[in-house]
Image 1 (cartoon, each protein chain N blue to C red):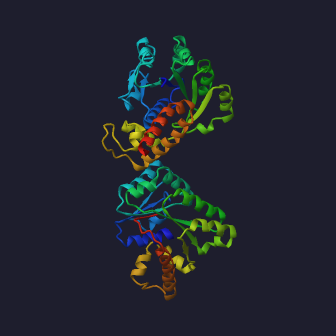
Image 2: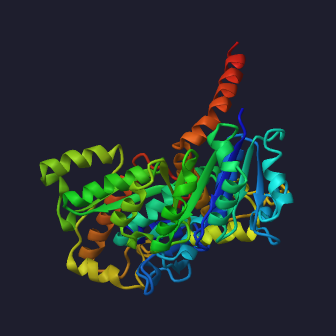
Image 3: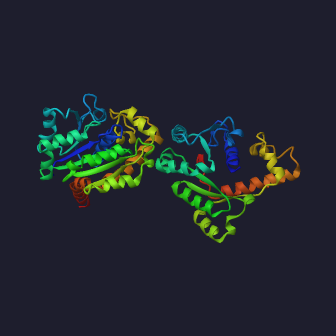
Length: 215
Length: 255
């Protein structure tokens, strides 16, 4: 969901500028919403790893979204760290932001800490999803979360089933919805989605690095 | 500085012996230690392909070529000689060196000598260790477990290895870490040293266009390898004068 919202926002700068690497191989998840900008990659293959990182360094005049499957997080950031991607990115003028989706378990917040470490100088943003529970409800979880949160975080508000069904449609785009001022949608859904986006964007603006790459 | 003769060998082929020699020469170059190399893979010379300026292809069976290596060690300006023994020739070379007194001279301290024995994950490799034990007394014997081109190394029984290793009191062990296959292939195709690949340089010194990712893999591998080499006494001894030169230089700068 967050990757889709970010990609949608970035596409406003021009669809040709946006590039997405979708690691949900072979079917693709995010790619279904942005077929023209997406490439589905098999990150277990060296060739595709090379493709992802080399493309970003060699063609930095694009905005990139890399949508990572949970099982690929560690392998991705292991490579990221091993090849010192943050140095290459900095040399190419690329700012990297890592948005890490947490669930409500300690395992998740521990994994976030590990990824934050491997991500080096990248801006690390933990993302909590109101719909799947609150890690802060566990005292140990809250303590560990504070250690990784630094000065950025995002909370995804809970959406109703109707809203979820609506945005699930590949034809739906958040940018289109905003551009048309929610025209054609039931008032209740319109209000809910505007509030949802407003909440997220207001959080994104806090201390936003604003670089051309978003992970 | 006493001359140092480094042999890199294995009786089993395909264990990454020449890669280890390349890595070692790369390491020495990065540490500003001048070295010369002898490639016994006659006449092709894989090592020679990567280090044409410092490598000579020789046939260690030939007395003339034995003299090129051994009779020049004391006089040569370059004090470190790396001999890459072709696959299957290690035992024979050690036997020859024993017969003509090379090993004895090393044991007597005329020069330093180290044997990097590159082993793969097979029992055959382990057996080699026992077979050459008679030659390794009094010299630096380093068992290099090569992970670089072995995907099944982890299947190797550690207990068995330790049992063989325990029988060699003077042996030191290092691991040649695994390098991503594609990165390895690309360095091979480029025909450059690992250091030049990382620096994105062609064999002629011009800028290259190697993959950032693959260079990153090689850089990480080299960094891990540095740590392995640096823990060896024979390498530490080699670095010692180097370190004092660097210290003198920095002291001079401070002044």
